[in-house]
Image (cartoon, rainbow, N blue to C red; front, side):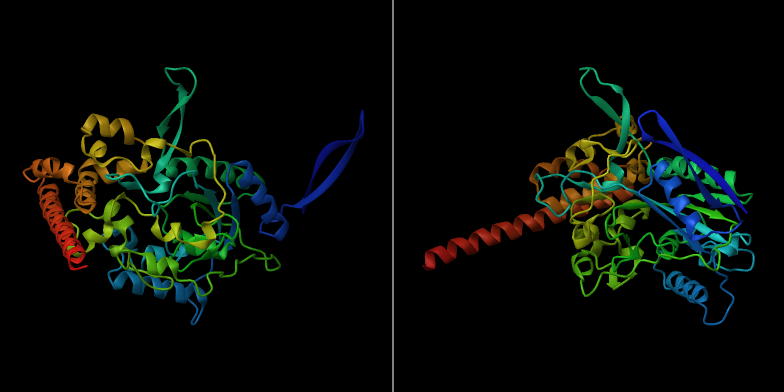
Amino acid sequence: MTASTTSTGSARRGEEISISISIPTTGEWTSELQQWLRERAAEAGFDTAGVAPVESADRENDAAQLDAERFAAWVAAGRAGEMEYLKRRDEQGVLLRSGVQVAMPWARSVIVCALNYNAAGPLSIDSAPAGTGWIARYAWSGQAAGPATNGTTDELVPTDYHDQLLGRLRQVEAAVRERFPCETRCYVDTGPLVERAMAAKAGVGWIGKNTCVIHQELGSWLLLGVVVTSIPVGTGAELQIAADRCGSCTRCIDACPTDALVAPYQMVASRCIAYLTIEKKGVIAEELREPMGRQVFGCDICQDVCPWNRRAPISAKEGMLARTQMVNPALDWLAGMDAVEFKRWFKGSPVERTRRKRLLRNVAIAMGNSGERRFVAQLESWASADDPVLAEAAEWATNRMRRLQAQHNQAATDGDEDREAR
């Protein structure tokens, strides 16, 4: 069964021609319909999209079974840390994220849509003003709130990529449901599936050695959203799976400060700075604090060093514009925020989910790593705070500051002795 769509154009001025295009409306994904989907995704504001088949994980030596076993082993090894949502199981004890059909038996395919969030600005590995922290690039996002008081620029208010992607996904979902009678479910980080695994199967990119999805033209600055559907992938449909182009490069592994990337394509999430600064509650292990450096929310290091991001295009999507205040924010500015100020700058932002209490813990650690003596008064004040986690982090940071000062003094003494010896 096909449906004809008609478009008109001008062959000569004042003369119209009609072109009939036949698009299959059969209840399965074909190569033509995948192209139609990519066009709908682009209209919704996504940069690329693809369709991945959902395969049952009940066949011996099947690729889906292997994926399920790997995920279960990763969780069993404790590499998920305190991210309990990754460990959820069904009534039979099967991990929900080990296979799409575990939670949704009706699922036959997954639409994966990717949004480029790269913004004009420095990298986290570039030189930065003393006493500044780092907020992950995806959390810079904002949208225009209307004319500012000077009437010349727009003030940006914070946005959360979950909301930005979900709104766009709804547009794609609506277009699909209009064409097919089918069951669908939209997810942005909340679904019982591993988005990056589906993205690789959908041809959105390959999974790099830093475990991020990498697109040959867009790089890895990608946010993923998925629509699970009951539409099967046709046997003749061409699946455009991206080739792994990491080659022999190990820059991401070499650059990871906390050694979270234990091997190519393998991450211990509980050691990742993004996990430590966002997901980790309570006290952060001491051996991981110095390697955290100045990161206060998330981490971009493994992406900043990736060669595939050298020419990654800058995105200027509405709702994902960069708020300049989030780029290399001053640590004392973050430290001085009360609850009202925190709400002003971060309500509706991804930073909101880490909460002010945990952000201050991260700021205290970054202050200690900075070696800036001007932060001592703030740290000493926090050392007697009611929050025991903040107090402990501040005390550690103060001691860290003393050690850095002692090292500086020793280096200066050694330098003087060398000059005298000459």
